[in-house]
Length: 505
Image (cartoon, rainbow, N blue to C red; front, side, top):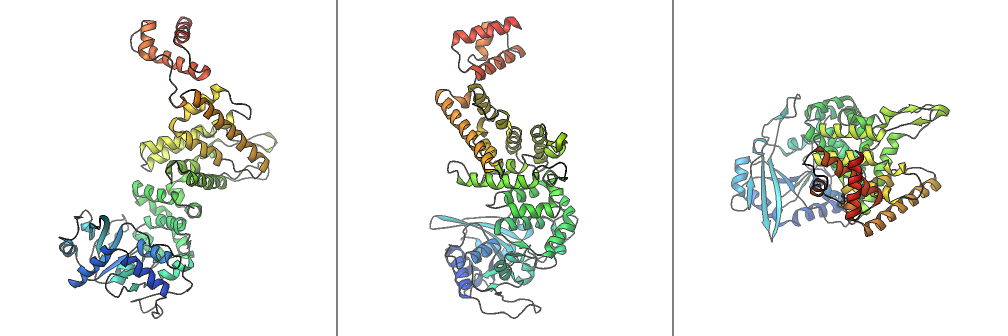
């Protein structure tokens, strides 16, 4: 990070301090950001030749400034540009230079483009300065073009995203709202009043949660107060947009601080009330583990296992959702037992249903919903077998029930151990190590990933002389249970067992 704890500004409002010299680290960062991309250099030249200004804005500027002084390369990716040119003028300037353009966002002043240079493709979104007004009943703005870069930046969600770098020859940094200073101080502020910003677009509150997780920022008191007072406004936002922001937060390296803000401000009450409900009261006579803190720790540990696994795609949204939500059935199943004990019988069953319902409401894909719900249902299965030697039958059933989720279940169960008792933690880890060895041993002898009956449906119908129907399915299930219990059977033994089952039936 930069060694200088003060702002770099250009063209700032009169109420702000006078502009100061740009620190060398910042100058180099913005030069690197622009000049590392021939596309940005050429774009700036094309717009300047036509008499228009063009500025790089948004996350790419913020991330390049974060990288300054660390020796890191400015981040690459999709780039956002703002300009005083109108959309139809932007399209004319891109004609013959961009390999393709699209205008799906042109009603909001945005033209998309892909530019190829040296075999590499760069995607750009170029947006005309905006001076919108919001009706504050939906998040749809009344679109209006603007003529001022500073006014355009004033519309942005947070000061750290309200900085611009000129693509003209001077490469000027424009920071009218102190975004660089906030970045240096790791502070999250809005360019104007936080309440006004969130009233314009309540989704910005969830974006703030994400930036706390992603960038390690601390929201100022005004931001926290506005989030707390206005959390109910999130009901105006479509579930798809809410889900996208929640997922982005969970996929960060260290989302815990963001989630604590999410719950502490009441935003979770609107989006994910099952998480807030984990903050159960603990009275002096019925002590039990703080389920909310436990769940956040399980998530921390699952992320560590996720990121350490070179064979699994990371970040793994399914694993992280399951780690965060695996105990959501506890509030509904809590029972006070004699001698001050507390039980949560069948909370995995209740939790799986709650998870399915909530993730469906947030419009997660069917696959994500089913996988997270299944992991929630299975997360206690390991503990049900006790600490003794695992039988072949128990191993087969564990693997079969987990199916393709087995590697995720391993990580979830290991992460679910948050005890501070080192001896108990070591014993649990050793027991799970033993289970994984047993799985490996049986997998070498049997195809545990595809446990099926020793006779298929056609053989069942032929042996019993019955047509297709419910009875074939019952016979198939009986043979599969037998296979799980005893392992592979030869043809003669399987037929004998089938006939005996049929006769007893």
